[in-house]
Length: 346
Ligand SMILES: Nc1ncnc2c1ncn2[C@@H]1O[C@H](COP(=O)(O)OP(=O)(O)O)[C@@H](O)[C@H]1O
Ligand SMILES: [Mg+2]
Image (cartoon, rainbow, N blue to C red; front, side, top):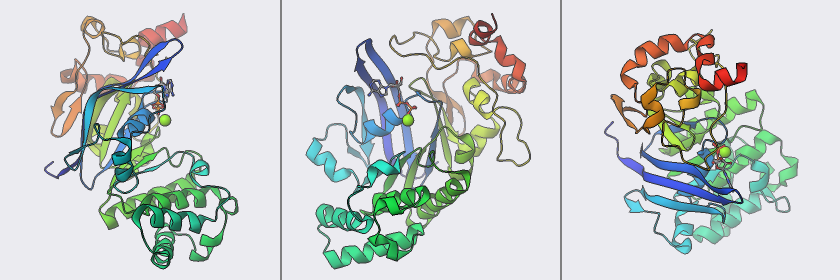
């Protein structure tokens, strides 16, 4: 892929201080995001997806710490920026659509006022121009312009999420990070929000990082797919290729059996066990407990993300056996062979 890289993440590690010790939430994550692409980030709950989004925007909570790594946005290093400098980047260059639209709209202000204020305060836009732009944004996200005068509680869940997207777009960022933006919505509304984001991306040449635990959402929306497990990036490549020919056993589990009625529906197998708690960073492949193909080397040696096919990377010692594993992974029983599977049976 020769497209210009918009966001380059290099060896990023983040941990949280807790009463039980430090949790290594993100470990040595590197990823290059081409300009104009839509990247889906998937993985079970607790795999570090939100931590990644917050680390990129310097929005980690007080107990969160960036242990190592760098982030370059359009060649500019973000990691070293002061809070004041970062505030210039946030929303104007990189905007976030959070999971809960309820929290990002202030209940005591009319939605239009929030959009207009944002543009006036952050960009110095004149009031009249800001109202024009707010109207444009509402048209763009498919809400009647007259509803700019409504308060958030007068909006349905889907409309609130659209308004949050309008707010994220208000300062014309180049990159939007959406963290499970449709989780609270029903399937129909979700499909429309996805279409909207996809359309905005095409129309405005935006770059999109779309965080979700739902693989079928990524299949419909994203060009590139990043699979995270236990704080690590374990597979990264063009979405359709990763879904059709996954190289990591975890991805194989997520993708599950063969495509069903349409090419975009999967029946996920259930992978016994849960992601490890990261109080102690294992000196092994992090998926070893749950992997039906684990061998001695997997227990002894941590994995690294390496190229496995064109524009496709995987962190598995046995990537060269992926064909075989893919076949075997189709059978749900194989997953009970893993340590976690056996532990559940006995
Ligand atoms: N504020 C926090 N304090 C302590 N641990 C946290 C905090 N936020 C997240 N974690 C831990 O970090 C890991 C990654 O969490 P998170 O990034 O929220 O994952 P995801 O978004 O994939 O569900 C989990 O083990 C989670 O328990
Ligand atoms: Mg999350």
